[in-house]
Length: 232
Length: 175
Ligand code: SF4
Image (cartoon, rainbow over all chains, first blue to last red; front, side, top):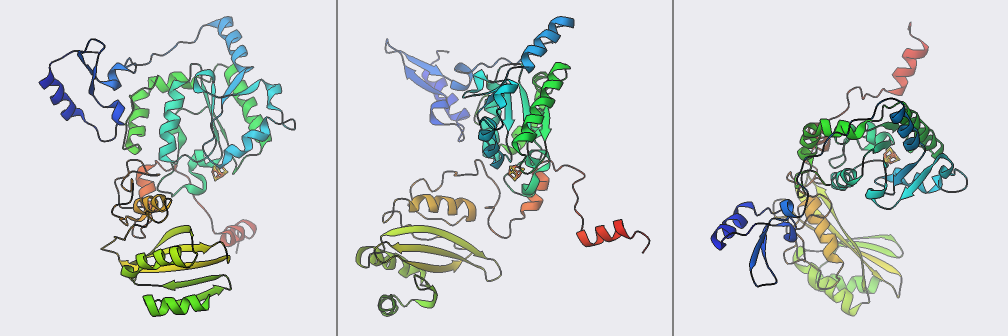
């Protein structure tokens, strides 16, 4: 937080007033406990502005052990984006019982390691997906469910749904179908496990290495970008 | 029902009356008479529920149509009220003071068709399309395929076949 004189503050407020930002995220002054005026720029002061770093995998048997442990405990973010999300609840019912594969549902991005994009993504939803994905902790994996995430599916010519998910976040496993049955999702989980155990599921690092490309693609379609560049 | 229609015909000059089913009738009315008409339907004739408002873009005839469906829960009958206006003057009176939820329909129609409802609460805020900067997407002169191809990185190799020719080539390649 920086203290500065009033004229300068007013100038700042006028220059950076962004019509897309929510009022509480615009630059403003708050009155401190001693009556002093404190100038805040929420996007810089309340959010971490440091760029994310690549976390290099360990070597040899240690990484193998970690990967085995990661693969056997996949915690899925409970966030459904399209019609395919209706296939996720039966996955956790006794009939399909995904728990026996070490798959569990978690309510927040901070606790989960797998993000299932379950179908078409509207531009509005993509914004929330990016926020949630970036808040997840490494290592994190993405499963793209349904043909909508592959080439747009039946919404391929829609004005508001994206066509290729892998241009916006890195994808580890695709599950084709419209919509894929729970069995297909289970087999997708097994493919993801194989991939993790082989050490090939490095999507999180890939995202950071190519961050500029991903951000350019994201900003091309999210025209009212009103969040920090990287949402820790 | 028919008595009410007769009365409306005298009072508001409704025209184009179509009885779709015994419990559902559509008619058209002049734009200026819409507000007094729905007010009287709500206050005097028991049509207390607004079911929805929807818009149609008649590009060839250069006009927009708005359809208001109101329902009478006592008699279990629906009335559909159509109004037409020019495409280049897309403005309509707001009815949010009669039904609060009309504001939501109007907000969506403003976003999808660009039909303005001055005075309707939050009508200018984005509803589904955050940050949209093209012409409203449900207007028929908006080319959604072209927009999608320019914006969303279409995957190459997406093609489709006419089933008849495809099977003919596959089964009888020599013919
Ligand atoms: S692939 Fe099919 S089921 Fe899945 S989101 Fe798209 S349309 Fe819906």
